[in-house]
Structure formats: structure tokens, C-alpha cells
Length: 350
Image 1 (tube, rainbow, N blue to C red):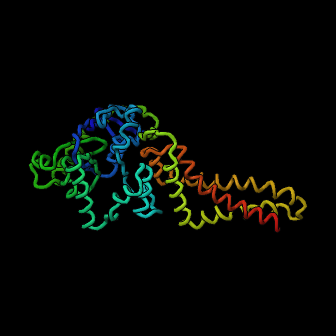
Image 2 (image 1 turned 180 degrees about the vertical axis):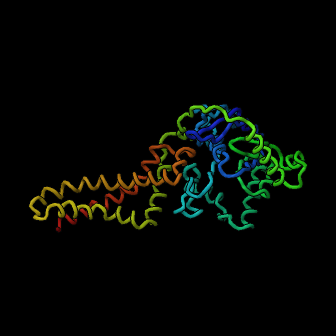
Image 3 (image 1 turned 90 degrees about the vertical axis):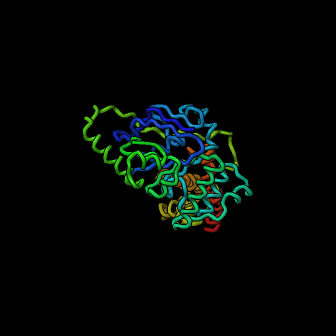
């Protein structure tokens, strides 16, 4: 199902993945275990297609992920959830609103979305966490879904069919939890993991540091989403999401509704205290403001997605760039029409 041969990934001088060779069969649950910064998230991003392969070979679902045609064909069969709220979820939306948003992006109708959302929960308490794991186990056992998950909890890792222990960008060992414990002759999985880490740390101290190699420039994430032409439904999904965020952000909503009127007073009257050029100035300012405010707010919303990390949705969902940009612009265009009426009324009665 997944095979990696000599996979390397660098970010500048930082080595994220170092000569990863790994084979994972289909229909199993795989746990990636290791401290922070050892390359677990980078490995998941490569397997999902959210990040471009720099060096080595990677096969997913019997195809080469270096091939754009294959990435496009397997996109509907891969789901990717990076770590942390805001990396591809939106903290301003509720759990159900996030699920509705992604359901629309992947073309699920209202009935399908309602069936999949069944009592969403944050999963922070023990009971909900156990239910969440049971759902994943059922998906793997009964629906033959291969699941990769990164976790720091050994009791959760013990539920996986296979575990890959990672350290310093390398996979130290990959096997079933019971086999890892047996091989090390320990009582618990945690003891086996610590034993592997200690051995790896000693080995790394004995090996001489390799000569520095010029690192390739950081790879820009590549989309694995199939391009099915322009889809109004996907664009409208971003329109709804942007509208919800506007309603919950008073500053942006005020600027979108009243920004043009405020700026017209400043430009039209503030720089012309004698009002002699008012008849010529104000009509010319109106179209400029109506173009500037929507474009500025839409650009800020794109920058915000980049800063939060949720821009990854552009690369791992079927949405196209035109759908993404148009969907984010539509709420501001609608508000620009309201602004036009306000500006026309001000110009008429002022």
C-alpha cells in the first residue's frame, strides 16, 4: 500500500527525513512514535501528497507519488489531518461547521454530510478519546482503510497493528507492538521504545558527521487534488466559510461594511477642507474605494490562511486556485454592493 525507498527531505540545512526505507501493507493501522521534531509530520505530509518528494521513491496505492497523474487519481482516497487546530481546521468555526465545509469541498450532498457528522466531539476526555480510537479501529478492520497516526501515548500506540519508531529523521524499527516488546525482551512497549532510542543515540555519537551537502530549496507543497474543472459548489463552500468568519470578526465586518464610507469622508473631505474640488473628487473616489476594500480584505484573508497553515487545504482537497480565490472574494463583492449604496447616498445628501 505504501512503500518508501531512500526518502530524504530537507528544509534548508535541517534534515527532516533521512534515508527512510519503509513498507506498510494495506488495511492496517500504523502508529508513528517519537519525540517532537523527529519527522513524523513530514512523513505523513509526504505520504498524503501535501508535500513534494525531494529525493527517493514513494509509492502509495500502487503508484508513484512523483507522478502528477497518479497523485490526481488517488486524491479522493486519501484524507490528511495535520497536527494542531488551524493547520487545516478553522478555529473560528465549530466542529460541525468544519465538517460541513470539508464535506462540501469533496462533493458530499447534505444527506451524506449529515450521515458522516453523527455527534461530533472534540475528543479531549478519556471516554471520547476511546470512542474515537474505536472508530478508527473499525475503519481499519471492517472497511479495509489504512490509517497512519502520530501519537505520543504508548497505550494508544499499542492499539496499532504496526508501529514505526522514529528518531532524528530516521525510522529505527517498524513492527507489531508485541513483536517490538519481544525483540527487546522488555515488559512494556515504552521500555522497548526507550531501549531503541538509547541505542540510536549511542550509535549517532560514534558515527562521524557526514560532509555538508548543499540542500535543495524548500519544496513548495504540491496539490494531489484532481482538477475536475471549475465547480461552483466548492467555490461556494469557501464563500460560506468566509461569511461565517466575517460575522464573528467585528473588526473585519465593520471595515467591510463601513470602510469605504469612512475613507470617502477622509479622502473626499479631509484633504479638501475648502470643499472646492468636492464635485470632482468624490465621484472619482467611489469606484476606487469599491475596488480597493474588497481586494484588500480578500488578500488579508489569504495571508491569514497562510500564517495559520490552513492554506494546506488548497493542496490536499479537490479545490482549485480559481475556486479558492473566487469563493473568498464573493462575500466582499456582495458587501461592496452595499457600500456602493451607502456611498451614493452620502454623495447625494452630503
